Image (tube, rainbow, N blue to C red; front, side, top):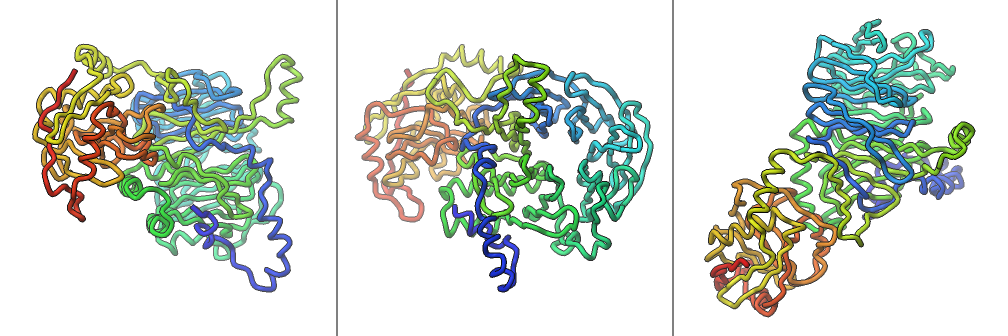
Length: 601
C-alpha cells in the first residue's frame, strides 16, 4: 500500500507563494525522527493475547504502567506492565451487568467503571482497591476524571443522555449538573495542561468547558486565548457532513484532539483554535477503490473484511473503534479493516502498519506509556536495586467479538517452539469447555484418514492435537458417511481443489454441531507447501463441512483458514483432480469427481 497516495487528500492546501516560502520548513517536516519511531511498536503480528470469560469492550493504560480491561459481563482486570509484556494483578466482578464506560485519571492514580446496573465504582490503581461505590439512579453514558484546582481534588463527570453530572468521587456527592448539549453525550475528555474539558454529542456538537467553573471560558488556565465564536472554527464540520463523532482523543501535549466519526473519517483538530489540521478518510468506498487499483490484500480476504465492516456498522461495537496519540504527540494511531495504522502528523505519512495479516478486526486501542529518563532517575533514588528498563512500547487492543485483548510490541511472536502459544489460556475452562474436552478424549481423535475417490486414494495426516475441534468435525462426518458421494465442486488450477459440500455448488454443508464453529490457528501450521488440507469458510469462525487441498504454497491464507491436515500419499491423485477441465465461470469440473467414502484410522 502506498500511504502517500492514500493520505494525499488530507494534506493542507497552500498558496504557491506560501509553498515557495516554506519549502525548507516543509522539507524538515517530511522527515520523521528515528528516536520517536523507536518508541513505537514495530512487530507486524501480535506477540501475546490474554483472556476474559466474555467479549472485551474496554482496554485502557495509565501513566503508572497499569493496564485495565473490562468485558461485557461486568468483569474488570488489572494488569501490570513489566520489562517485556505484562503480568496479571487483580480480578473484580465489578458490576452485575454490562460495563458501559471505563476511564482513568490523567495522573493514573484512579480508575472508574460505570455499568447498566446504574452504578459507578472508583478504584485506587496502585493498590488495586475499590474505594467508592456510587448508586447513580440512572443508566450512565460516558465518564471522565477532571481535576478542580479550586477544590484541589479529582472529580468525575458522568453523562446522563444530554446532561453532565459532576461528583466528588470520594464521598459520592453530586456537586453540579448542567446541560450544554441538546442530544446524547458521546464522549468527554479532559486536558489537564489547559484545565479544559471537551464533550461531544451525537449531533456532532463539540463543547469546551472549564474544569474549574463548568462553563465555557475564552482563555485556558495557562492564559492562552481560545476561539471567541464557534463560527471561527471548524467545529461544525460534523453537521456539514451529516455524521456524528463517536469518540474523542486528546494529545498529551495539549495541542491537538482527534475524533473518529460515523463516516469513518479521522479528523485531527488544533485544540486552541478548533481548526482542522488533518483528515484521514478510511471509508469503505476509499478502501474498495484502493483495493481495485493496488490489490492491498487477496480479493477473497478483502471481501471477508468488507463483510465484517458492514456487520460492525450495525452493532454498538463500531463506536469502540478509538484513536490514540503517542506519548510525544507526534503520531496518531487507529484501527482499520486493514490493520492498525500509525501516522506521523507533521509529515502526514503512514510510518507503520500492524496486524495486517491477523484474522481479528481490532477496535479499541491503548498505548503503554514509556518510562522516561526523568522517571527512571526519580524511582532509582528510592529503589537503587530495581530494574528500570521499562522502555517496551506496546499497543494493547480489543477486537470484534473476541474475549481476548492483544499486545503488539517490538517483538514478533516466537514461532520456533511448538509448545509455546501466543494466545495465553489464563482463564479456567467453562463447563462447556470441560464437556468438550471429555468428548474429545472419548472420541480418541484420529490422526489419519484415506479419501477414496473415483480417481484414486488420497491419504491424509490430521493434526488432532493442534486442531481438535476441526478434526473431530471432519472425522465424525466421515464416520457418519456425510461425505460419501460428495463432489469436488470447485477446482482452480495452480491453486486448490475444494469439496465437502453435499449441495455440490459451494453453498451448503454444516458442522456436526449444526452451526458454524471457530477457527483453530496454530503458528506452526501454515499454507507453506502444496497438498495442505484446510477448512473453507465465508469469514472468521464460520467453519462448516467444506474443505480444500492446496496445489501450491498459499501463504496469504494463513490465519484465515484452519490448516488441519496434509496429504502424505496420493499426491498424484490430487494433481489429477487439479487438472480437471472446469466451467470458466463456476470452476466446477465438467465431469464429476467424487469422494466415494472415507476410511478413518
